[in-house]
Image (cartoon, rainbow, N blue to C red; front, side, top):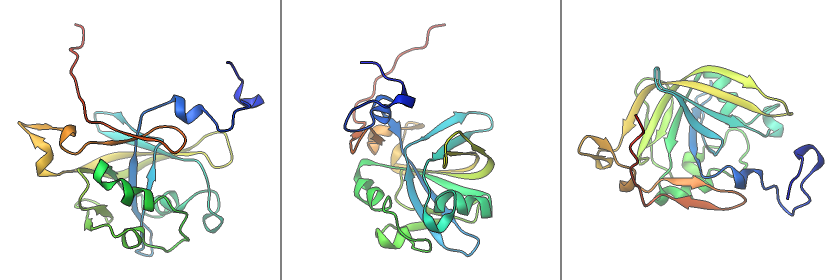
Length: 200
């Protein structure tokens, strides 16, 4: 099968996000200028640079009470900071609960019963039980083609790692089983890891 996205695919569901998988999930915590915390998952997320360390996530839809975007990006516009929480398999239900389209002003930490902790370098909450959390300062927001497609780039200025995830000086993903986004309503969990030496 071949299709041009502009012409449609003729399938019951869009296959695009099922093809580009697995995708890490950025569980983005923000705090608005009014002090209200927000937490939401984004699967268009990844690390993009080492030095200085930088990450990105994309917001691709909007809420009626936030104009051209959603709460996360609106809060980042106001404060210039955000925290990326890494999602472990045992946090999957809590993460999924924060994906609900809550109205502006609803605290997802409280709604989903998620323990929060304060960040160290930025004024923002983080998921206390996340295996890792990346405190970020906004680099830039890039508008992509499409009505609500916005990409947020941030510089990582603080890193939290759970002590039980550090093994022999390495951050060990098998200690928490990272959750990944597949297509449709599907997810995957990483339980097997192998090494390949890069050619010299």
